[in-house]
Structures are given as structure tokens and as C-alpha cells.
Image (tube, rainbow, N blue to C red; front, side, top):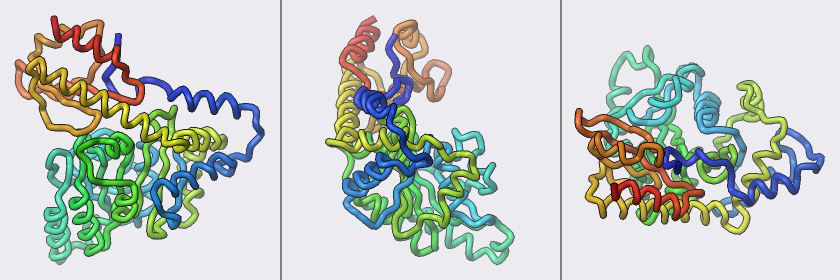
Length: 343
């Protein structure tokens, strides 16, 4: 069987496994104080094009989202997100568990609009009883979104301006950031993201690493004693080298971008295949997540051959199915899928 279920169903890029093996017996300091973590941080700063950022490594996406939000907000503050946002739908209340409410806005292809955010904040502070409510302190977005869609440069700029107007932090979830940056449909760079956001992260778990996310704080917004926050949440990895070596490898000779570009090439071919067989798309995604509408009977074509994710049921006769490519998707995988479609 081949899997298009997600972009973390395989292990790690071979180059990462090779480097982990080569460095395995090196005695190194713990908790991220090793030379590989320091090297990875410098390489990330260089590719962003800014020296005035702080980089820290964490293990996984949910852990990262919860830690960033809890360490950057006051106890009485909440975080605004699209109603389809990952922190609102698929993180088991992890953010609320830290004591911070997720405040939702309407989504538009997975995104929130600056004008609607501005209107919400104006209405909030025009309510004379706002001090008895959870005060918004941050805006959470993801790029790509849960629907594989991307923010345009002008949209990020507009959101950033509204956040500054109302004293909100702007936080970008970049679990799949590599695929967004390598999409032909983007006009956003890492430098743009660093200019617009107060914090974001470069996802590793879904982009070739065994695990790991690289958190980037901009504008001097790194919380005081952030490492202490990490440890307090039980998230400080003693063998921090495991994260440092992986990101040092990913950001050597543009490997991160090379494997992300490969995933996007596979996604474009996947999209072409579905179009060739007359399938309709639930949403026009420019990244590695593709959502197609299939008749329920058609799902039998994939049995015991292809793994996918059921996304939703628009009606009794049809299913929205998500197919995801990754750094490890092969031409052979695509051939298996096409053979299924041939029936």
C-alpha cells in the first residue's frame, strides 16, 4: 500500500538519519547547548536574512503552539484564530488547558480577514464591560492553512497592521511552512514572515525531520526565561542535539527547500491526475494538501492499495477526501494511485 494520509507518515530524510548516525557517539552538552543547535540557529537566521531574531527548538506542533501562546500571553488574555484553525479544532483543547481561551473568527478558505479582525477588535473595546471578558492578546494563523491555502503578502501585511493597531501579537503556525514557501502560488518569503509576525515556526516534523519545530521570535518578542517556560511544561529535551542536528542538516545546502519543492512537484502531478479523471476539488489548494470530492462507491477503488484521509461528508453520496504529498512521495506512489483511478 502507498500512503497519502499525511506528510509525517514516513520517518526522516536519509541525510538526517546519516548525520544522526555519524554524530551518535559524540559527547555533547544537553538542553540545546550543543554546537549543532547553535549552528542550526545561525543557518536559520541567515536564510531568513535577519540577525535580530531568536531561534529555539521544540519537539512537536501542539507542544509548540501551546508553549508559545501560554508564554507570550498574560493570564487574562486569549488568542484569536479562524474557526477552522488547528488550535481550535485538532489540538484537544491544549491551548485552553494552559488557561487561554481560543476566540474564533469566521474562516475564508481557512484564513481570517484583516477587516473582520479589525471590526471584531473595535466592537470588543466599544463594549463597556470588556474588562469582564477574555481580552484578545494574540492572533494565530497557519501558513499553509488547514485547507492548504496560503496568505498573500498583502493579506499578511494587512493583518500585521491591524495587530499593531490593537496591540495584538501575530503568531504564524508553520508546521507545513516549507511546502507553502515552495508553492508556485505564493508571493511570501521567510523574510516577509519575519517582518510581519512577532513569532512563527519552521516546521520540521512534516518536512523531513523525525520530529522538531524551529521557533523564531522577532522584534525582541522572545519571552523572558523562555527555556524555563519550556522546562516547566515538561518540554525541554535533554538530548537537544537530536533537534539541532536535524535542523542543521535541513538548512545545509538548501535541503529544506529542495525536499519541499519535490513535495510540491508531486502535488501538482497529483492534481493533474485527478483533473484528468474528471474529479472535482473541494477547495483550490496551491500546496501539498489536495481535497477531492468523490462518489462513495469510488472509494472502493482505493481499498488495500491507497491510504487517504476522509475530510468531510458533503452529502450522502459523496465524500471529501484529502490526499497529501510529502518530501518522500515518489513517482511510483503516483502510479499506484492512477492505476486505482483507471478501475
